[in-house]
Image 1: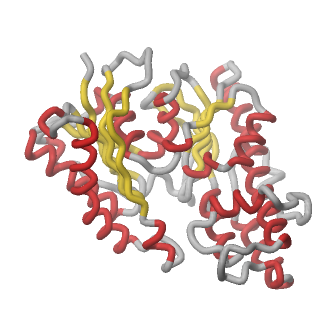
Image 2 (image 1 turned 90 degrees about the horizontal axis):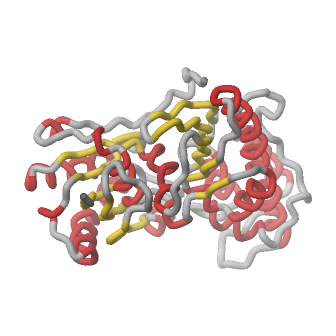
Length: 358
């Protein structure tokens, strides 16, 4: 019997609510997305050059109720129709996480509905099932503003770390690089766009941990190299005004982006090798997270590897639909009312200083 699931996502700066319909345990077809509403704080946070947790929390609080009202209206459903609430509880910024969780608890209290606490990193990869059905196991590449991970996914609830960044995430490298180039925040989409008319071979930026025979990543050296290059070549910077971008800037963007993509591609080879050692089969690849929208990355990975599957772009960034989808796929992990009112949020998934891989 099909159920209605409400998804709430507030792990960082995007506020998103979604309602989908699906049959728990039966995944022959993707679930039906009845409504998906979101609010991006990009314009608000642009003046600060990044996410300010307190500002993000206050904006989540202001936008959640209107988004809920809009989502129920667009879906043609009522709050009492909901069978389960999925909400991001980790990882992320604690203030924003708690804002979303408290809204979920309020809904649970009012309508006595169970809650599934969702690790939104897992939800990013499992969002592949919103478009197509893919058998387990698979190799997941999760790349976002805060995380870069290679994961062996054996089931919807069994994720094993094969490799991760030891410092900056890929999305972080894009945003910090954009700040150095005076492109503003966030910079990932703009770098991708400018790189299309730039020369990726014009300049060479280093690939972190290039010589290591594992799937761990490092982007801090790439970022530092860009900073040192710009100190010596200030004429390659954006002037910080208008939307006129020089060819020198476009070449730098293309070259810097290439270094990030080459690192992700290179380490995918080692991740797949480890996956084959563990499972005995050649694994399909699922790529999710905000950086998975990057057009150059998509071209490179599809060209170099077999059976690469990208999450649909609208479900790559943080969104409530992927949270509702993950709650549906992990139906037995829900916490019944009233025990769900004791759920808490946590900011971290792994400790980069002390993590273990398979």
